[in-house]
Image (cartoon, rainbow, N blue to C red; front, side):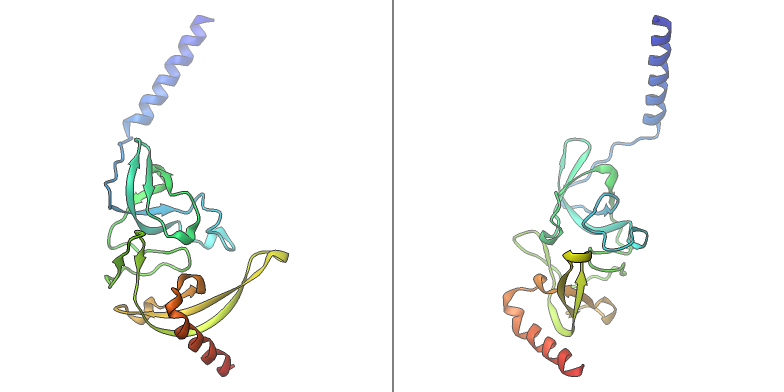
Length: 187
């Protein structure tokens, strides 16, 4: 019995040594930009997971939580807990394509973003180009989402994006109403 136990302990030690041989401690500094894996993000999936990007971001690191977790500064509309295991985070390199939760990957282009008090990026709207509605959800739980095509100040037209109405501040209402009126008149 003791011989079997010692063999099991030796095998366990070999497996631990083999794993630790190639493992490096990952440390992220405060403010460092990182990408987040979509592996466990259920709320991110609308449709087939095969077509979704594997990484979204970049997001700034708020702080390390112990040796194996990172707390990120996430947009308020993501509605998920901001702490993730380091295996779900990777450092952001400025040349990688980025993805936000609402759209497809785009090339990185420096722009006029600013950091606001809530630690979220804020972008300046140059013009609201179009309006559409989409049905989101499954079966009886479908709801209508109002979206606006936005041209961002300081970005080329390839960075135009469809944004849900909840992303806009109340002072943008006249611009949104104007875009909605234009869209309904053209139909």
